[in-house]
Structures are given as structure tokens and as C-alpha cells.
Amino acid sequence: MKFGLCLTGGGAKGAYQAGIIKALREKDYNIRVITGTSIGAINGYFIYKNAYDEMYNFWLNMQMNKYFDSLNMVVENRKVIEELSLIEGKNDNVDAFYVNYVEVENKVLKEVVVNIKGLSKKDGLAAIKASSLLPYNYEGDIQNVSAKILFEQFKIDVEQGIYDGYKLDGGILNNCLLQPFIENKVDKIIISSLSNEFEVPEYIYESYKKEDIIVINPNFEVQPQDTVNFINEFCTTIFNLGYLYGKNTL
Image (cartoon, rainbow, N blue to C red; front, side, top):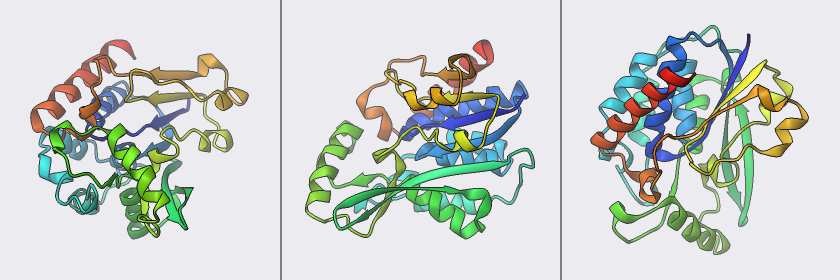
């Protein structure tokens, strides 16, 4: 059976998603098509490169400054992309790996979807960098900020043209990239959600039956500040939660 894997965005909650992926791998799910948004694009890249151990180490050794290297208009992810660039593996089972990001031009947002498998390593990583580049124009305490606050400020900044020319987080427009599965048919789609309130977009049911969509939501109460909580203790805790939940339920 051919599976598709949709990895939604959610910042530091991607540690939970990585735990789910570990369980999927141990159960030998035949993942053939991957879509990733934001942190989901980063986790998807580890699968695409057959670098599962590297993904586990990435999350279990997470430090706050990996993402908060700089806060000048974006949550800089330069160190993360540098880490991904060192991976040389290849996953021959993956037929396609799609990511999305947002281009801002003349105060207008446009979603761009690309198949990483059709790109050079440099261009593929550039797309992943854009997909996971969260806008950040906020002067308050980092520990108390939420994605909602950041996106509310982002809307104001876009109207003022501040982000013109930027390529940014795909979750701004579409945090659940399912469109590629319409043309790239699989038997079942697994959606790794990072929200307690996630709902499957209705359009996918024009191409798939409801029983063909498997949704894995967090089995803990997500807090607004979790998106930017790249502290090692938090990431390690929810990675293990995701792994145990996936191991026992999938």
C-alpha cells in the first residue's frame, strides 16, 4: 500500500511530529509522497534524505539559539539550513516531496508550491528555508509570544509594504499542503497535525474517501507559546510523546 505523508507546520511542535515519524518508520509504512509546510518541510527533508537518526538528534539536542539566532523581521533559521546542508543521504522510496512558501510582492501574498525532488540541493534547501521562515516583528518577551500575535503583526506589516520581496513561511496561507496528493495519487494519506483544532480541508474528499485520510493530532494540550518554545526539555518531552502515541495507535 502506498502512503502519502502531509506534515503541517507548528514550529517547535515539530518535535512531536518527529516522534510520530519515528513510529511510522519502525512500523515500515511505505511513504511515497511527502508534503511539508514550515517545520513540516524541515522534518520532511530528513525523510527525503533518509536521515532519520539525524532528525532524532536534531530534536533531542535542540537548543533555543538554533532558531532564535536572529530576530530581525524573521525568526532566522540559518543554522538549521546549514545543518540540513550537511546531509548527503537519499531515500529511493520517495517519489515526490512538495513544500510550499509565500512570496510577498506589492503587498500581495502568493503561495508557491515546489517539488524538491525536481530541484538541485541548493534550490531545494532555499525552498525549505523560505517555507520555515517565520515573520517576526515583535518587541515583547519571546517567552510569551504566540504565532497568533506574530501573524496579527504580520498582516499590519504587509499592508505597509514592509515585507515586499520576502519569501516566508508557507503556513501563512496554507498550513496543510494536500493539493499535490490530487495529482500524485496514493492509497492513504497520513496527516501529522500540530493543532488540537485541526480540520481536514473538505476539497481533498473530492479525490479521496474519508477512510483514506488518517489524521494524527497532538495528544497533549497545545499552548499558544509552544510554537516558539525551542527549549530542549520541551522538544524532548513532546518528541517522546509523539513516538509513544504513534507506536501505540498507528
